[in-house]
Length: 238
Image (tube, rainbow, N blue to C red; front, side, top):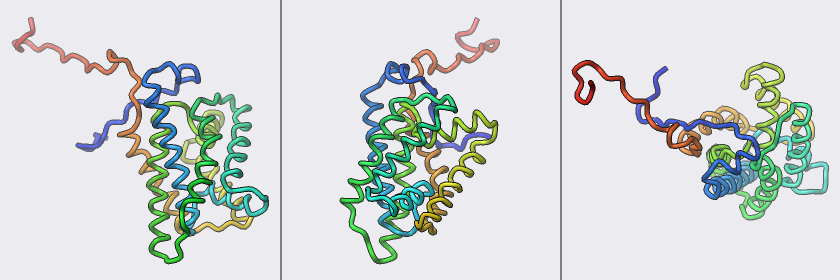
């Protein structure tokens, strides 16, 4: 299928190891993108929680757990991230700089955003919160994934299971998110229309934004276009 005219061309995600991530170049810019992306992701979580129209499947789970323990939502999110990282061990996944940053920073950033954001009561601002949360989640994900410093714990779990089971990304991601959603509802949290909007929209939005935000780590030689073959009689050709 041909690319749509005017659409951004996504630079390649390189899948670098932890050491190579730090030596691949443009590190200050990439670290800034990573932190900015996580901050936006934390804000998106708070927007969807405070909107009370339905959060992402993982945040429904986090909210369900938070109902039963005397800690903040962000603390539950961090603890869940650590548990997910432990599941990387049998999958032989190697965490990167971004993985560690995601694990340690996303929960506190979500808590700060929840503390700062007022909770609206009217339906229109609540829906606005939800929609803004979906867009900011996609933007934040594209920023931190595009920094090429390693996936978040949950994304790494998904890719590890895809590699070990041979199943598609879609089927593995769906199985994971349906499982955590059902667990969250069983723990007393509520899903809603926002959960459906998130499930349908965040993937395509993230893909579009990645087209603009992946940091290109190829060498200058690799980015050079291939020379056109000479045709007989063409100027400059023998």
